[in-house]
Image 1 (spheres, rainbow, N blue to C red):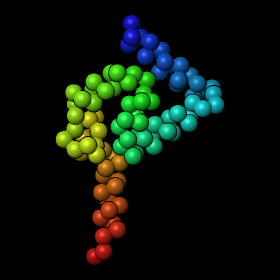
Image 2: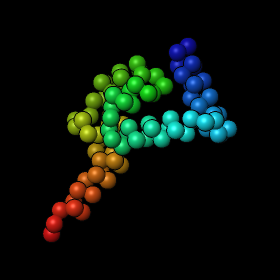
Image 3: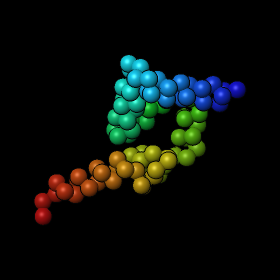
Length: 91
């Protein structure tokens, strides 16, 4: 039943986005900022199912804290940060 409630919340959020409900897009933008900053606690506090997200994060713990358990070393944010750091190095 819990998964059904979460699915309904996700569908409702998608509907809010489609209808242009104030605040719906801002929620997504804030979540994206948290992802880019790799602010795991912030993401876990704001996700639809924090309990499940925490369990998955723990279960799939990445080798490095700077990447998520889903993307690992293919994390677009980490790759972008690495490219920017190399570009700033002289020579």
